[in-house]
Length: 102
Image (cartoon, rainbow, N blue to C red; front, top):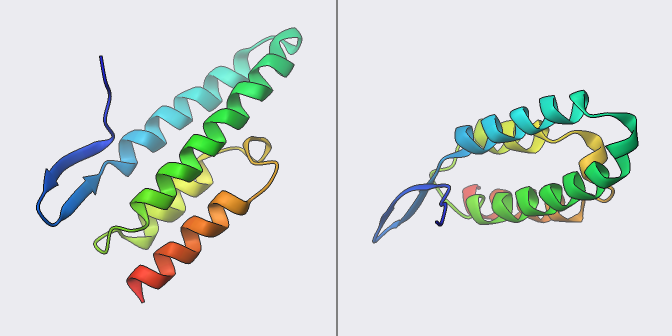
């Protein structure tokens, strides 16, 4: 089974379902807050992998000329700070969005 976070594909590009990704991340954060302290280190490694994945997704979505800045902001803020030990991926996505949109 494959999963795609694009709504549809056209000859002009893709439409990204940012709201779906934000909802999934919010559920993950709720789960993270419920786990026992003993599982925290394992979850920390997982959430950092998710952070890299989200920043990669942001970079791709930022290339969409129709992407609203509010969608980029909501997705970038959906991750807890601990998921991004470095912000290079996020900075690249923001830079790409600004180049494409302005």
